[in-house]
Amino acid sequence: MRIGFLLAGAFFFSGLLMAQSSDRMTRREYFETYKDMAIHEMRRSGVPASITLAQGALESGDGNSTLAKRANNHFGIKCHNDWTGKKVYQDDDAKNECFRKYASAEDSYRDHSDYLKAKSRYAFLFELDITDYKGWAKGLKKAGYATNPAYAEKLIDIIEEFDLHRYDRNSEIAKAPRTRSTSHPNRVPTRSILERNRVKYVVAASGDTYESLTDEFGKMSWEIPGYNDIAKPDSLAAGQIIYLQPKRNKAELGRNTHTVKAGETMYTISQLYAIKLPRLYLMNDMSPGTRPSVGTVLQLRKPVKRKVQKPLLKEADEAKSGEEEFRIDLNME
Image (cartoon, rainbow, N blue to C red; front, side, top):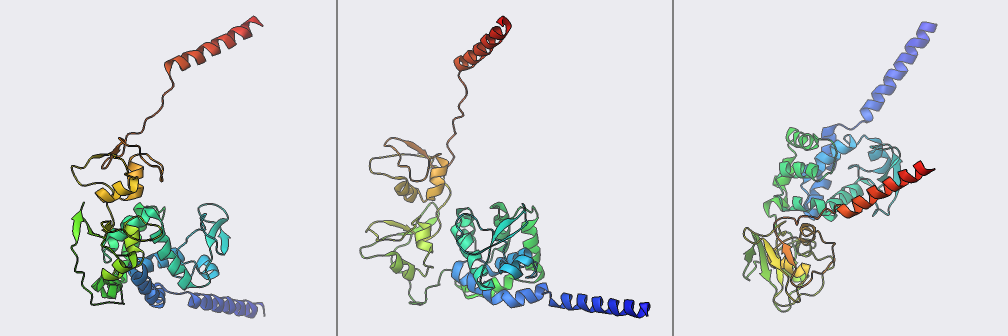
């Protein structure tokens, strides 16, 4: 009787384990389930579908992790200070860390794209070709997306094993990477396209707006404002330089410094040399929003050397003298 009970129990637990294993999504099933979502996000944001899928599979355990099932969080994105949505807590690098909770996997995929677009440390990735999955993988690791030193290699291995880069090549965005406007698909720009610091730009004409240039050059709505360091697109003035590609981290060879003239701002100088505004502030050890004084010499290629304050010899001698007096007082007692 006891043997029969044990056998029945064994069959029960065996069946339970089989049922649990059958509920788990395989990696191939994960890609089949979410590939259309990743391609949609690529067309919307410019993040390669292969990278999105590989990150999603790796971060969510192919959709089987507690975080993916409990919070629809496929990318392990934590709350951070700017998150106002729902939250869940679980142990990660530290105990009881806060993670974002989404209503659906689609919301998670969208937030992942927006997260990469919004963070300045990932901006350089959007300069890469949409099919350069290796550059993206290595760039994500370099920018600090994950702490695992083998993170880039893991993404690349997944992409190549499952041929995920075919989604980058076969999508509309890969065939025409800069023809995303649908209102005038056959429109060809007629104005002169110039180049400075290896960055293409146009000079705004009377009546131009960010919306009209976005339509004319087939850009996404965020691209031209973003390339020109504009947070809230407003009106354009005739003669204004408008870059059609991301600006560089430093000026072209030979343009080492700039002496500030009357009326110039850090923004106008960044536009003059096609340097990213945050980078220009960083190179010159200035806080964002600071206006340079006339005559200030700004560095355009190499960061300014920061001054390290050392204690003056006189102050050191005074401190030493004070210690001796303190010891003398103790001796007198």
